[in-house]
Structures are given as structure tokens and as C-alpha cells.
Length: 132
Image 1 (spheres, rainbow, N blue to C red):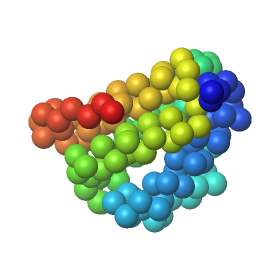
Image 2: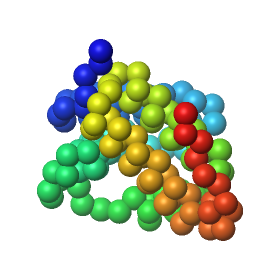
Image 3: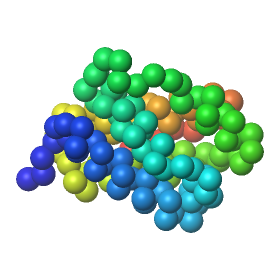
Image 4: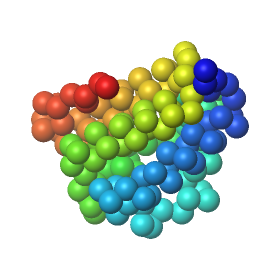
């Protein structure tokens, strides 16, 4: 039996493993070519700490402007959002199971759905993520 995501150490592991998968994914790696991971990963760990554990005041900021700017330079496709969700959920399921893990996976789907709609507009609205 796998353990649940229990603390910041678990989040750090999950997020580092997840982004390594994306950096090596032929459909996603292009989006990370100019990413400073020394800055990006700690912020993403703070974000997921807030999402999973509702830790107050740990993450300040908004994901949308950064992703909208990136989309203007290098457009996202529906498939990119599906790949992101699939890789997040696969990574979580590989190492963890439990309530916090399910919370993280559902949040990933919700976040991707919101971003997809806000970035792709009506095209994004017509597409629901596959649940496996």
C-alpha cells in the first residue's frame, strides 16, 4: 500500500518528478525550454501546498497571466492540457494514494479545465478531460 501525500517533502517529490516528466515529454518540453526551474519549482510546491493542505499565506500570485503570456508566444492545444493532467495524475498515482492524493488530482483537473477555457475560449469549453 502506498502512502498519502502527507507533507511538504511529499509535495516537493511529486512536483519535481512531475516536471521532469514534462520536460522529457516531446509534446510538452518546448514549453519549458526557457524555464528557470530553480525559481519555478519552489513556487509550484508552494502552490500545491496551498491547494492540498490549505496552508495560509504560502502562495501569492496568479497562474493565469503567466500561462496566457506563454500561450501568446507558443500556443497551447487541447492535447497539451490533457497531457498535463495525464502526467500529473500518473505521477501522483505512481507514488501515492489517499484523500490528499485524490484532492491533488481533482485540483489538477479543475485547474487545467479552467485554464483551458480561459486560454482557448469556446474551443476549450467543448472538451472535457478523460478520467481514467
